[in-house]
Image (cartoon, rainbow, N blue to C red):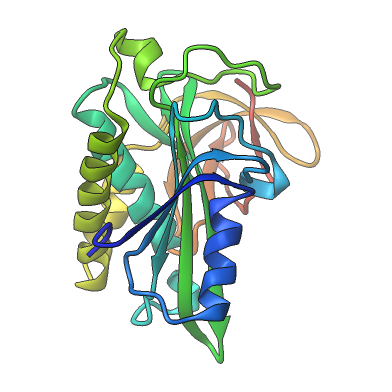
Length: 245
């Protein structure tokens, strides 16, 4: 289903913005991918920008209608998109992890970012737009992001962008199908097993201080569970906790 229709553009302000406007204007087939060679105002989490050299990377948004998923469980959308990307990358790269909530890391470097925008109406999840920026062939990064990396910089290879999109769509489609089929336990288990710094004692910063803790799990609603040195487990929402890299 995912990728059965692809709308390609040389330039957009943002694939997520275009997808949102398209949904308001017409009926769009589920799994449709909006693709741009370049974004003039690519968006990441919490309003952050996304740097990408024209024609070098994958910049896409996927339109989904996960109406069987409750708003409480909407983080599962993020889980399956993250897992689909890491499944695809795992064929080429080692040590591919998901940095909560949904950045994709190789070792300590960021290779992909995800922006999920859900539409909820009358306690129902009506639609989801899954925006993905995946660094494929870009060799130099001039933005302010501290640790970007691409498939090409890691392997030294030049990748066929179209082929990467086909394979990525297939990997995400398999994970999305498992979600629609209700395989929640498997999804959570796989997501947890791929978490960046899972069970590793490392430094975090919350609204009070820097502390040492270890990630032990993620709740169904997407809260990150961290145990501190005193054995106390606290849960954090997005932007309530920072990784000290």
